[in-house]
Image (tube, rainbow, N blue to C red; front, side, top):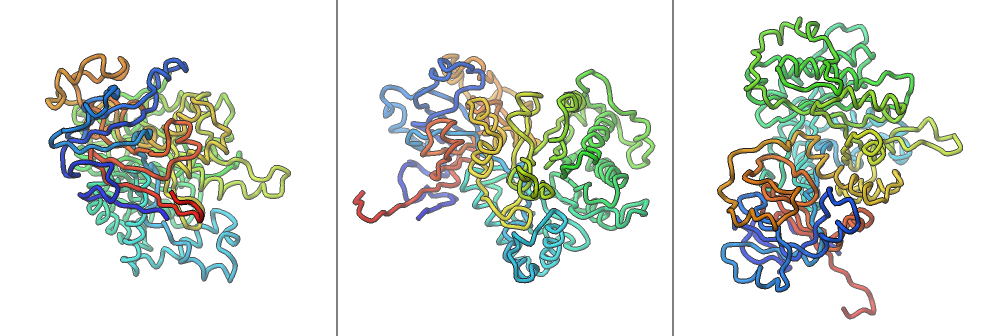
Length: 564
């Protein structure tokens, strides 16, 4: 039976960790690393074979060293350092849930009385029915806050056990649940802040407009605007596809941008990230709304005087029409105060599967250098979409974004996320991004080349972290914690140096660690390379957050007739 220990201060029963978990320095020894992305040949990759020592202090990586011929010389008799022996396992950047619903997890058993005695999985025939089933269950959330808290706690803890140290957690706010889901999420964010960065996104799953004839949004929009101003909220989002009309869906998108810009104090001090659950269909007759998001984003960044151009160097929209909104005309144009705008994330986007090659290139050009990331949700997308094709010879299509192909063909990096678990939208799967997404992706994308495997693993690590707004470019003054000796050029590959700088609240540039990277990792003790990590991810894992071991998962087996 598996045994799991989420660490607060003690290392747990298996003594492969030496030293106190409260120590500020951690050395990860006897660990294998992915080859740097610049290694394009087998010879270059083989040059990085063997094991390494990763030194961490103050929450960042301070050195990357090859294991010496006498590992004990490196790892023994070290004072004030916690030592983790990885046992030859491979270490990856920690995993990230770039799109997960904190409030709707583990509710499948709450929907049993809604199926007229039949299995919920059989009764849930499409997205609309899943929405209706979930809405009835959701109505009970404000009356069962303890259950809401326990389910959210389980989601975070199981995620950390799997190697997740950051997530964007969507919580719904509307006339049905009010702020109950948000209140619980804020408590969970505070409780687990030392082991996982829980980035809260207030989310309007329900329509902002009550009927097709309504010219103005209803109370759901008012609640969303109030919720986004709460301390501890990092993102705001909506699902425009639930609106009664396409016109109102476009207004939904514009309203979310305007909500962020309507409060000057909030806008200038801490602009919220933007997250749309969008284009969730496989209907070629339906207009892709991603272009409306791009248009509104360009208007938004133009008002901030931020430099984000399309690939042809031209703005795509006229800003004057947006400036007519009284809520945003008075914003000061101070580029120094608006130097880091929010990220924009698009979830699902299954409609993009129907784009032609030319349309994909046009989309890539339209996005340009906007801080814009698309997140595919394979487990949910494949389960919900394509039901109309059940009677065709090949059945439903692979109705989720082809992550490796899109990166290779169009240069667009797509993240992957779990989205839901154990509910009407996604009754199957686990909270492990590796097994639920990467291993699953190998099959559905027929992706097994080294480049494809690397893309899939990046999709649940680096690309997912980029999707929730973590940046590569936040540098501060040279770090005093990294000595000149530790910066010697023979320690890490030339392309991996971060000479004289350390990073704060950022993501690493590569799967191969570099001095100055945040010390957030997952060690896969039973995997020795990226290929095995993708094809059969290790159950035994150690999760590291800010240079501190925060979770360990081990397994215990017994087989009749075996004495070992």
